[in-house]
Amino acid sequence: MNRIICWIVMLFVTHTTLHAQSAKFQYGGMQHFSLSNTDISTFPGVNFINGVRYQNRFFAGIGFSFNFVNPYNNLFFLTTRYRSIPLYLDGRYYMGNKRSLFILADLGLNPTYLRSSEWDNNTGNKGYAGYYSNIGAGAKGRLGREVFYTVDIAYNMSRASFDWMTTNQIGQPSKTHYQILSQMLIIRMGLEL
Image (tube, rainbow, N blue to C red; front, side):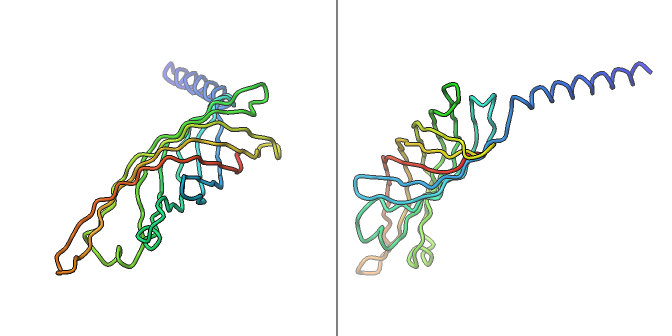
């Protein structure tokens, strides 16, 4: 009988504690369209971030982006269609009484994705993951009861690399290792739930 009472008390305390904590934690999701600007070009991208909010002041989540990157203005990158698909952790701190201003930081991996007939037909080609990081600030405004629009601007540093196999004029294989280091300004606009 004492075991049953202990189990009932433990279940009641656990339920009460979880219910009190669930009011502090909320799901948060964001979808953005982005424009990334380097010294050579501007290119679009899309971002998806999901996570949890704590007391509407802190946000922590995981996100990924699909960036249509062409950081170099040369024939190789124009014909190869280099893409970046970063996977990162996103942290935000909301400020002010209405929590309409925020600062953000992202840190994660930046795998390369190359598509071309030469890349697909050559087994010696290999991509490597690099790093991806953002630091920035933004603002949000209410569209509905639980829906907000957001605009943020961030400084981005990222790195990726890959090996490219070719055949020289006398038929011997040749490998070139490319390092892609980029620093850019990113402007993101989108919705936050």
